[in-house]
Amino acid sequence: MDLPKLGLGTYRMNGAACQAAVESALAMGYRHIDTGQMYGNEAEVGAGLAASGLPREAYFLTGKVCHALATPDEARRSLDETLRRLRTDCLDLCLLHWPRAGLDIPGILEMLTRARQDGKTRRIGVANFPLRLLRLAVEEVRAPIVCDQIEYHVLLDQTPILNYLRAHGMTLIAHVPLAQGRLAEHPDLARIAARHGATPAQVALKWLLDQDSVAAIPKAGRVESQRDNLAALNLVLDDADRAAIAALPKDQRFVNPPFAPVWD
Image (cartoon, rainbow, N blue to C red; front, side, top):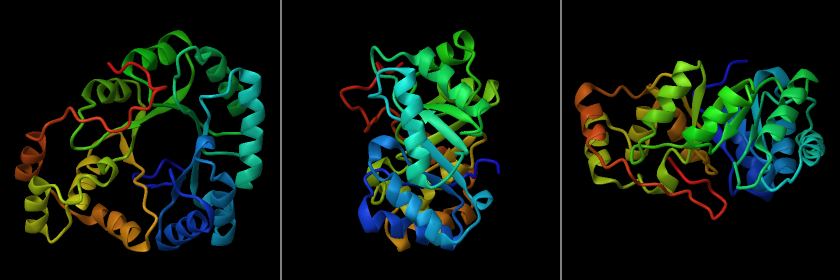
């Protein structure tokens, strides 16, 4: 299965609510579920996948190797644990989650390449890599990565990374595509939304989904939010809408933990 344009992010989802969110998303048509070791919810995601009744080939599953692991061997063992918790033999995509300072990036990427060869994941990628580290992974390590999952939304420009990914046939997967809920009442987006009978969040999401080589994984625990995000696929933005969004400030980053890299 190819990477769907829209998926379900599960960061900060836990327990029964996480399992229920995965089940409801799959029931209404989502076919990409994204999780990660550092989220602490792989078992709940796995339970939701199992309870959905869908065959494994019917959905796209992304997992992530935690940046806190010190060595490739630790990462390899943790990937085996991820597969066990998710109740699957193979991920569709496995990412190196954060390029923390001092991490053996080449070693981890080489381990992921071997995991792909061994059938534990169909694709590998990176997450939160600035352009200089993306170049390292592609041009020096020569890892067969297919994507960079990074913060991307109407308030943050990622043109240099997006251009690089497109030039190399890769995908930008936008996490926090709704700026952690900050766009729900954004006045400029609200004006666009009013013309379409939509919500500001749907406008922001469709702006991303309309772009070549871009996919998005908004977190949505409530059924109503999942349904609204899915409906954004049917929204049609025009040139005036895109011009208004282009005029918004594009320098607002909201995900910047202490272990984050220096951004380009």
